[in-house]
Length: 252
Image (cartoon, rainbow, N blue to C red; front, side, top):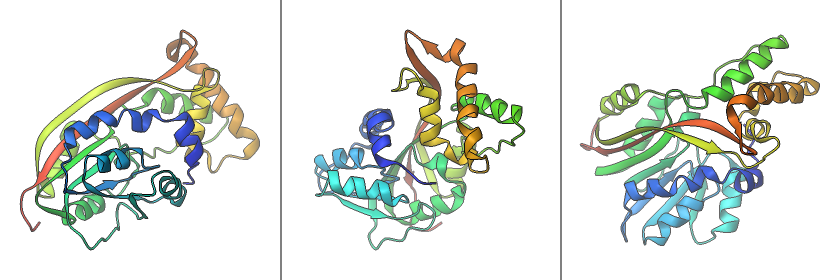
């Protein structure tokens, strides 16, 4: 999908703001080599670099990488896909915030991550967990069906057992897990749900004619007003999965 890097930075900064505490799980040290997988506009990548680590940020969206390079010119950013990246170096750690739920081919991504880690290297991630944004997607599905359009699930939001089992299958030892709710305030007090869907859910409406898109988004938002709008602000229910794992050996 096409990403609007400016809209992301200006109206959806909570994505990387909430990632600040994930850096505490990473505990980057001076001199370490760290890969930020799905770095977006680079805010967290730059914070890791400030700890003295040598950081490489990769993202499949060229618009995001262009923004990251403009705002943080001292950090190494590259356009690369999570399922197919191939870099010369091996890393002490791979860090990933709010990215892996966008990846449908999880096995390919874990293969790339595992093979870019040094033995004993750590993998620290946060992604959407089971139940993430069910409120928004449920409202959108109903609004689309009301107008005769089919809703097709897109994201990968695994349970704790599902994802940790997959990590173990690929040769990781899971050392720490946190699965938790996070009610998230949206930036626009008038059209927070609509704007969120325009930023993150445009793929759901790719087959919908332009004239029907806004009415669908407005209907989805209004159906959530009683539960997701309070004190003049829109909220959505995030459910997050954090994991810290390590590579056990040099071979799968």
